[in-house]
Structures are given as structure tokens and as C-alpha cells.
Length: 213
Image (cartoon, rainbow, N blue to C red; front, side):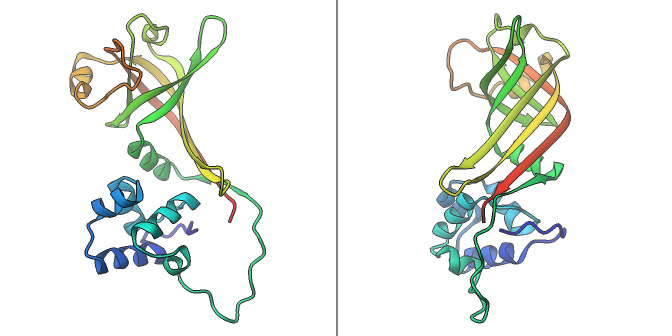
């Protein structure tokens, strides 16, 4: 996995782009094959990144390669590496925002009447704000600049790696302009009448990534 902090693309990013171009594929086509977003593919090809094992497997499959072929042959004189212990690493804010922008489902957490409430929501990231919908009579719909958190993650239980991003901030009702701007771009899987749009203004964004190899 490539986690260097240089500002340019990694050697693996170069290899992925060259392989895609050799196959005559567009980034959108590779994204569809790999089950990733086009933004994620473009990020991998052009900027520093960290891959989960699942993403690496999907990319290799999308490019008609094995993982070994994609990551490059090992030097014949190099001894086999011992298994690595899991490593927990913090993620930069910029990488967290890329993952937030590419996602659409998270879990909000807020203080209810007698306990902390955690529920999944569909969301949209726009203009540095997180937007979600809820029912007009829900508890969170009554909040105005109250503390809230939203968490999103991706884990591969087989490979025992993944990442999580946590956003802490304040939640408030969307303005009429914000509601109108998001009305046709935000669906709710839960169905029902969820026409109250809420805004999360973030003041802290953190992330962690766990790698097992």
C-alpha cells in the first residue's frame, strides 16, 4: 500500500494510469469495473493516496491484472517479508474530505432526551457543508446549532483493513436556498416523508486507516 506524503502521484498511481490508457479505458469505465467513484480513480492516478486491500483487489481485477502484476514484481534476491502487524494511521484532513465527498451514507450521533442516538442517513457534501434529510417531527429536526457528529467508514473483514472518518460540528435547519439547491440531489433510502433538510457545519474532521499488510 502506498502512503507516501509527496504531492505528486505515486509510482502505483502512475502504473494504474498507464495500464488504464493501454487498455483504452476511461477513468469512469475503470471506476464502474472496480465499484469505485470516478473521483476516487482520478485521485489515485494524480495525487498521494492510501488504498485498502479491497480497493487494490478491485483495481487489479478492473485492469485485468493480478495484485502482484499491478504492484510490480518483487526483486528476486529479496527475502519474503514477514507478516505485518496491523497498523493504525491518522489520515490527513484533505484525504478525509475526498472520502466524504465520494460517499453518500453515514451515521449521525446526537444527544436525545435520555440517551445518545445514532442513526444512519443518506447525505450530500456540498460547499463544505453536509446535508441530510429527516422527518419534520424527528428530534434532530428541532435542533438549531446543536452539537452533532457524523461518521462514515469502509472495512474489509477478510483483509482486516479499512478506514473511518469522523466529522464533529453543529446541526441546523437548512435555509430555503440550501433546501432548494439540494432537493433534486439527495435521496433517502428509508422512504417516507423526509422533507426537512438539515445542515451540518463541521468544525473538526478526523480520520483513521488500519492496514494489515
